[in-house]
Image (cartoon, rainbow over all chains, first blue to last red; front, side, top):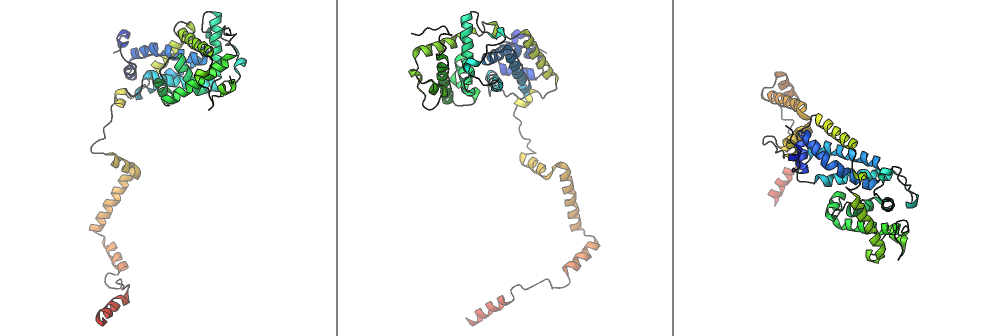
Length: 194
Length: 154
């Protein structure tokens, strides 16, 4: 028998996944409500395009549903696994995009992709995401997870399957490259020199 | 500041401290702005259509019969009477059909050995010439004689 959603809210993700694999539809609803917004937001931050982010989110969640019967409790956090899946799916999509300089990337066609209310904030965030697009894949992934997702280095290391020291190196190099890429756009970003 | 070296991220990287503090501050502001928009901006909220599609996927996957997760998660202890070695040996031989043929041939061999048909007994006697000593060949005919002479001469 399915359990009520408020009861399920206290259950950890991996236990819900076991319930899901055993046919519990309420567990599916609880996981959907809990994880899909998080997955979508991550994809949106990495891709900056709503349609693509929705595709990635649906794909990532489908992989979660399919792996549920084989999920081993206690071995990995569901959210960490999902971060990795989404990051890889987004990286694949970004690789397929034509490689162009930061100033040549057009503004997003979809207005809903704009990420702030004020025009200034919107322009600044657009500049940030376009600068992120110019970074090598691993640097972009590490910087996004560290500085935008706000994850700790050990968790990023688990997601990217590298050492904590490698995460620190990637984020430092990525941050330097971002600062350099944005240095020439200070006027656009609303910062005055000096 | 050499932007090219920064962008390449090569071995000659400048430490973060060497970047202008206002550039880093601007970058940190941008990160904070990006973090702050999460959850507050509708652009980061999934549409109802996406939530419905994900739910439909989940129910479709559930509809397909699956091995219950509990069975997968529980470690499977090897059966005491069928250790992995015998399972592997059986697989190497070709499985149960090959094993059936092997057992049949073995039983037939044992039966023939215990109770040989007369035709086979006669043939074997002919081939091996059991009624003569011709098959006893002295491979070193001079050996014993030499030893003998050494013994008796020394």
